[in-house]
Length: 183
View (cartoon, rainbow, N blue to C red):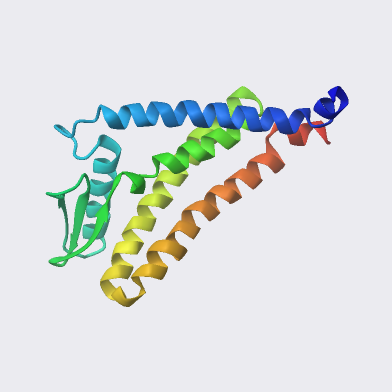
């Protein structure tokens, strides 16, 4: 049994580190959401921020965009050229994806400075791509409403999770301690 543990020590360490970091960050985020009362930023700060930035990017692209609080649920309504097209909910703000990304990087950590800057730059990249994803989804829904299901459930989740996967692969191959042990 002990030799089995030694054989799979790196795998067990990865799983435990990933689960610990993911659990702690998810708990902190859930705690944050519980105490976001929506009085200053509705429904919460990050969702509100993504909503306002979505509106700004859409307007910069020449659309007449407006993002307003949804009256019946904790979300923001996206109105494009007078047409209510989408809702931006908490799950759209990218924070959960960033937590997933960060947990994996921590589990395959490298040098502290490198890990810190990779997590920071990767999180900013994920946030930016997520914002672009929301903008493209909104424009896609406006011009091609008949493709709502495939746009929302296949293509756009594939963009964000595909990018995270590529960031993970790049990290493991270039910077993680695991890769350094096998060179």
